[in-house]
Image 1 (cartoon, protein in one colour):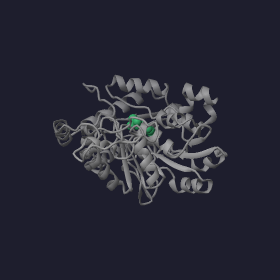
Image 2 (cartoon, helix red, strand yellow):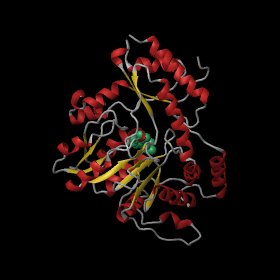
Image 3 (cartoon, rainbow, N blue to C red):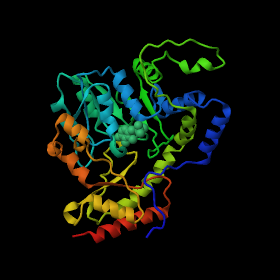
Image 4 (cartoon, rainbow, N blue to C red):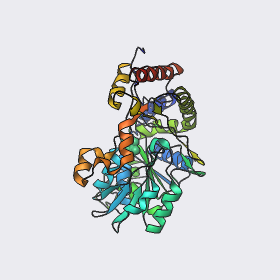
Length: 386
Ligand SMILES: *Cc1c(COP(=O)(O)O)cnc(C)c1O
């Protein structure tokens, strides 16, 4: 058995970003400043969007995207229940109601065929989530949005590298939001980014994210001379610090290299698990690039004597940390009670919720780590095989 605990989602951090953070600290400018400006420019260039606005989290970005899009109390916003709570909470924080639409299998993303049925006169926007880095069916979603006058806000927390029919995620919907949380593909500790081609959305996100102050307000202490700011909206404190951007600048350069490594690990898992009582992730859809953010297996519970939580605990005892992405939101008390959802309202999301386990997939993993994960999964599943 493995000696030390393998932490799930432990980020790879290298010397260049450590040095950049130190330089940033010594520079005297540690909050929003020139490094944030540079990171935004690099990110916009990487994605191919007109604007990239850096924030202190993806959650903040989702909230501001709602506000920039004009989502208000009484509105409805369609999204998937197979996501992190932040996606739905952002809708609620704007005063609107999240309307869940079931996922499709094996992709596990929102089922575009079902969206239209959930559209009402109150529906203002849709938030597709590119789960695990697998792009949603964006052609279909954009067509529905166009014919129903909906704004498309993409939750791309898992999908920095993803592409759909030759387009990078971040250039398709009206606003796209990325996460740089510690477990994500690009890490800044905490952090997020919004991309958009829309001048008004970019301006609102930037202003609302910094107290609602007029644009470029952070420059007011620079050597350009003191400038008065004007508050145009009771905004929020969602700005990214230069300390965070210092990491992002270097992490961004290594995205494709890290993806290549995760892809290798992905292939090794696929080969190792082909004859096991589980389903490996479906291959990427034709014409798409999968960001390989999460390697999630679905346990064939019918072939096992115990439930998923017991398997996860057994892996923990083998010193292998895992994640659960996700327990469908409609099963959580807040959404279930507030919106009167029943467990089988979204049968496919329920199916995944009971079976999913995410295995370690960081570029930091050594070949020995990967072998340890495979051995542990094999041992545990053999123990509980019917
Ligand atoms: C991590 C995550 C978020 C939130 O990202 P933060 O940067 O931690 O705010 C939002 N949506 C999904 C799908 C996520 O996995």
